[in-house]
Length: 342
Image 1: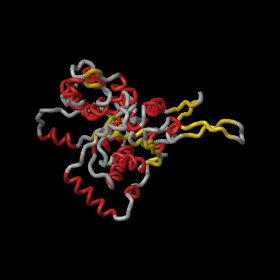
Image 2: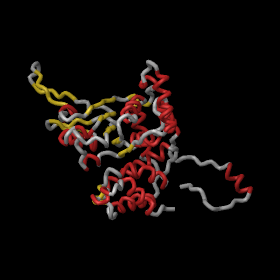
Image 3: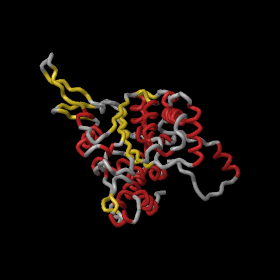
């Protein structure tokens, strides 16, 4: 792996020679980078700011993972998910979770066909490539649990019959952290199915001004009409396979393991992260490196994705939670304490 030398003084000739040196990726990421740049450009036609959320959504897409987006109403959680789907030529489905929603409303159900005198399975909205679930914590545990198999294994078993979903399959779920009435907290097993949990904050003053100006200039135009689809299902699968080829040095594998191990030995945490979190950081850091044009993972890639991977997989002790300490703060402290490999 080619890394820059630090704190070294080169002679003028050496500096001139270095300017002429170019490094080529061992994995060709040119096409992938162009696609990522195009998606960001399309999303930028409507979305103001939210760079981190967009980066993490693209990372999750390439890492073949699911995303839970948490934030107060009105900060573009749902519209960003819809716009991302609009840039892809894939099937898109949306489910509004409500307290009376049943598992069959998501997965589908068997209906008796009088003409054929047999039961016929009618597929539910989960049979798609990209599934947006609005307010996932609005439905009770029974309905939430209906997503366990499909999110982990990309398949559904109904009446003893297995139905496999064609790739890619990605769940984008949103939830409001403020409202508690009429909501059902997602259990740890359900949260663990998400590659990322992304916390979205309010825009800055300048971003807010830009949002208002764009809305004023829209007139009768629809926001979704500004975005065009260009990335096919086949291309997404191709890029996902390409990400698997990203190089990770052994010392970075250990770096990931040390971060996760520290969550299990932290006095502020009642429960640390599982090995699934280690694997999630590995996959996410490879995808993050790819969208930034590198065919190798750096410690910065790991740190960039670690918080979003870990924060929903740990449980803070009640005492620290009452003090207002957040999972994000604890994870950041752990990352600071783990020595960066050189």
